[in-house]
Image (cartoon, rainbow, N blue to C red; front, side):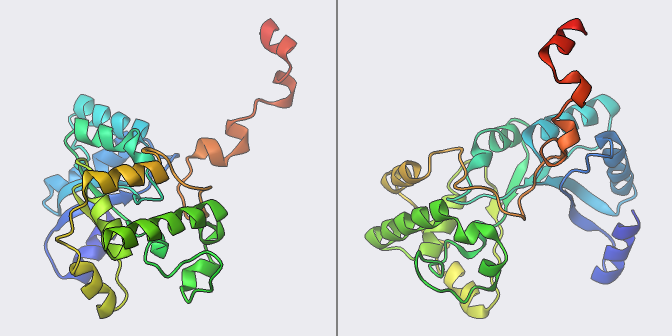
Length: 248
C-alpha cells in the first residue's frame, strides 16, 4: 500500500487504472493480497487489479477466494507469450477466458529472438543475448530459423509475424511492445494491420506445437516454489524407503 502511494506521487495522479502484482508470493496467502488490493480499490486509489505470470491453478484459487470472501477479483493476467513460448495456451489462457479476464502478454518477440537479430551461427549485438541462456539454446535457434523461412515465404517482416501471432489467440487482449528506439517503434507500428492466414498459423503449429515451450526455461522464467525448493519435492531421508511409507 505504501508503494501505491509512492507511485501516485511519482505519476502525479489520483488513481491507477490497473495495478498488477508481479508474480505470486508463496509465503503470502492470496486472501491477504486480495484484501489489501480491495482496500486500495475501495479507497479510490486503484480502478482494477491483475496478476502477472501466475500459474493457472493460482488464478483459479484467487477467483474462488475473491468470491467466497467478497473481495475484489483479478481482472487481468500478464503472462509471457510468443511463438517460442506457447505454454500458456494449455491452461492459463483458457482459465482467463473462463473468468472473463483480460490478458496482456509480454515478450511477444521472445526477448528479441524473433526480431531477426538472433540467427544460428551468427554473432549478434543484442546485449541480453550474453545474459539469458535461452539465446544459446540450440532447439530455440533451430526453431527461429524455421520462423525466419516462414516469414520470408509469407513476405512478412519477422517482427510483424511474431506480433500478429501473439494477438491472433482469442484469449489475448493485447501484446506489450518493448521498443528501445524510434526505429523499433516505427517497425512495430507498421505491422499493426498484419493478419495471419490459417495456413500460416497451421505452419506455426507444425513448428511449435500448441501449448508447448521451446527449450529449457532461462533464469528469468518464473518457477513455483515447488520446483525451486528441493525440500518441497523430497521427503525427509528417513521417510523415503517404500517399506517406511507402507508402515506409515
